[in-house]
Image (cartoon, rainbow, N blue to C red; front, side):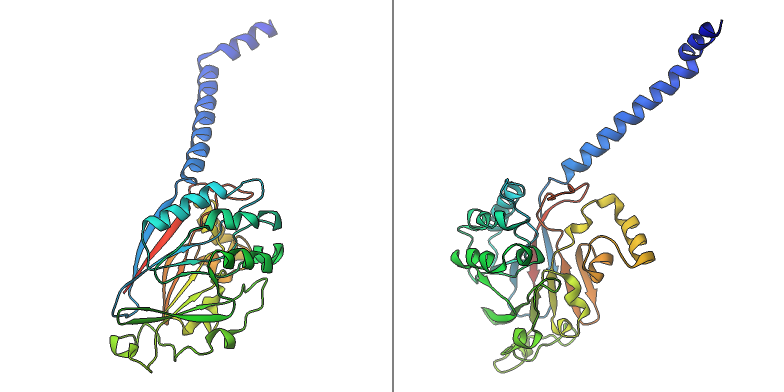
Length: 306
């Protein structure tokens, strides 16, 4: 009798509906997980206009956070990003660090970035992962390709009537930042508020583009001398739908992902307007050395400066 009741319960319309609902929920969950991972593999070129008051426009390609390993993780996406950046024909290219996940991945730098060129040059800064792996070895690989590595130093980019000081600093987390050395020889920096073509005259102040792997450069008074800061490090939050939860946790505890950046915890990716200028945080290239991207697309940022 008890067996008959149990069989009846398992085969009743209500039981069948529950089982069907569970199957549908499971299928939907798997579909969402797969869709998020697929989106996380879709590289985009993000073209972003930024008005910093220069007379001759500049197009700057910005790429960061490749996290390549000896096992080939990250290499395929890195090559796709480099090809996409070349296809945009930028005036200059800036690489923002974390090229590798460990020392064994350093030879991949030469494999992936070989032949990368731009009319005004290709420039790079180092990230925390280069310091943890072997910063000097990573620097040698980059410089062997003709890429100028800026460690607390500056160069001046010139196109038409525009002069733009590109300042690169060492990693704020794992390196040794020397702000004085970084800005040595740069004419007096001017903010976006005071920008204007007259300011670019010989002997006058020129706008500064600051490259820093970690976006916390935006919290430093020295960093706020820049009209625009470009950074990475955050991976755009890596898991897109969890961004609101990440922000809530960060606000509640003062800790959370991404680690090692206060600015990045509330500014995970994109262009941000500050009283003194702009900050662009790229979501980076890596598909994820450990945690895969989920509904967060890798990108090549094309900053169209004017």
